[in-house]
View (cartoon, each protein chain N blue to C red):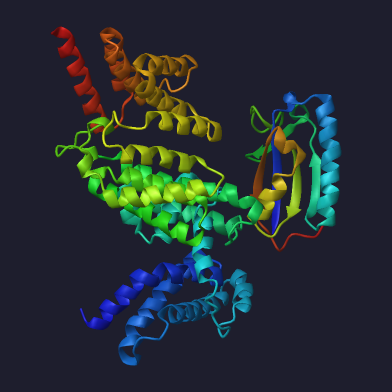
Length: 118
Length: 412
């Protein structure tokens, strides 16, 4: 079963050094997860200052600067994993390097069988 | 009632939770298991009068329940593709192995108390699925609408399914954390029953019994020292039920209780469990609280209580489980050991740090110590502060009485 691990934290609370360490450790973890057959994908995101929001209302497209919601903690990256059940997903979430500073939200993927393969 | 109905009913009471726990494992779904359980007992009512009781009713019920469920799944699979796979995986002719049955009850407890479910959902699900209480019974005990409670249970089951919370006993590294969650649920149920001392106290006292039963079941399945500690703590607190309130429903403090009303059997059982838990080595927070409760329970009078030993247990407890509440309780014990001035100083330190300022018992304890020190004005203010914060009716009446007595003594 697939789970999306969404990493939330206050992006201003990271020093450059901390961020670099987090990237290095996350890449290492991704390699471990790949070797154990859990890895489907992962990536950090650029800060919310780079975010653009799009909605279409009454046929009109509205493009605005900024994230969907201004929050104290922001979505900063994700891991997409394959785990046997929630307990395994929780254990993997607990191993993500950014979990020490932020919060990892686990969301089970709703599988649509009609979606094309990547 | 025909005798066979009485027999089936007795089997239902004794076996339905075992059968349910195993059916959840075999069918992989709470709702399917629930349906299968009802079908199995319906079949028993129909077949046992003609064919007689099976040698092993539990095995019979599990087999019949599973068979009926597979039938249901196959019929539905024609319309619902997602069930087709499940229906292929389930083999109705596979023999039922009952060796795992005790483990199934433990799986059920750990699944209902999974930390990925909200605490209120954990409590509702545990009482519903592990204890077998009805939705109406649980709702009335928690003073909420049955529809609200039913919704909580439906949502929890939906999450178990969607997020794939496994039907498992946690692995060794996860066990302490997960056991802690189970103990918390049980203690929450107990406290919900314990806190209510008036009004609809009858239904709520049942929650204490239910929590103790859960503790006993858990101890049977998983003899961990902290399970002993929690069960001991509940038994020792429950032993004072008859002495805790007056016939008019007023609260009676530990110091003023008629100790002959305490339940000796529960005290002895609690004490024995405390000894067993302490002997096991690593001492946890429940065991320490139970050790303190045991010292109170075996003291002939408030003044003859072993206060130094109680303070010593609190010193350990604040290391294992540091919290302002523990500090407050320790301060009260220190007041009994060294005098009210020492206790008061500790309580004022806690409040000065901004802890427990909204907790009525912190102000009530401060008021009581000020009263004993003859500081009438401060005592009165503290009682009034406590009264603005108190929520339980019997506790309010108690504080009002204390305040009246304080004012009338001061007037003399």
